[in-house]
Length: 339
Picture 1 (cartoon, rainbow, N blue to C red):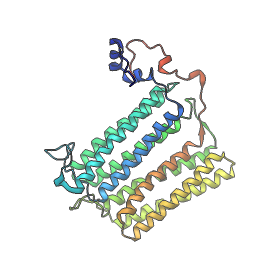
Picture 2: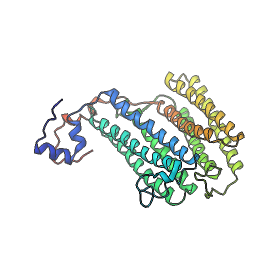
Picture 3: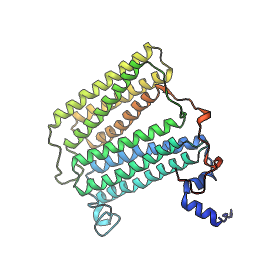
Picture 4: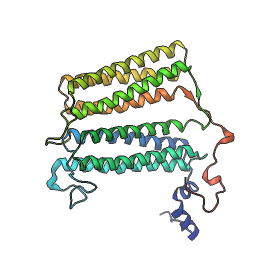
């Protein structure tokens, strides 16, 4: 049995005042560990979207009819609540797993050498998005699965995925000013693709809010628009995104762009192709639950693929003269604020 070292009174006070700095002074994660920690946050951000979709698709949205407790008298689901209660409560518990993943990422980013404040801030931004979405999730339950709050819940999850992907990507970059790898016209075309994809995702939430999967077995208010009409708009936007992705790939090839952006543009097209097939099949089969769930997963993967294309069009070399030293190497004043 390994003996646990005893902490002095000063060390206990330091750990209480600034636990992240305390950990950073005693543990230096490898680059691989930092990347894995950031990747775990991305994976859990996608998982929570998919499991949230499973809650809605199984009609378990009000399996726990109140929040933050599952019932007025119980913090957890009870046997009388059946499968719907277990599914909804299980999804709530996954939020803690997501918090753990984001927390691990924050600790790893704070303990890395050299320590980069910009990365730590991105980690904390993920944490606050998770907290905000948890509160919004409670509001969704309290207002009886109002479709507008459900849509906002999904869009905030997409924001979390965005920050998580950016954090993961920035680990291999420096903090110097980014240098574009392509011309302005190519960059503008890429941003047009990003905006069109964002609109595609947003309209997709309207399709969901107007569709038949309300999230509960009882009657739940739906967004008062023609479902077929908004589905057609969603499909039109999908074709625009596909056309832009194909155009971007040809342009990158024509201007002899680096291999990485061309490869990621090709990967984006394949993801879009798979997502489009799922979308059309679910439409003609009257939106079966399993295909809707796969389409939600595909939405996350499409957005991640678009972000990877955008981020690959630049390079951000490290600047050794401006790198921030690790916490263990700094001579911080006694009452220095935590990052």
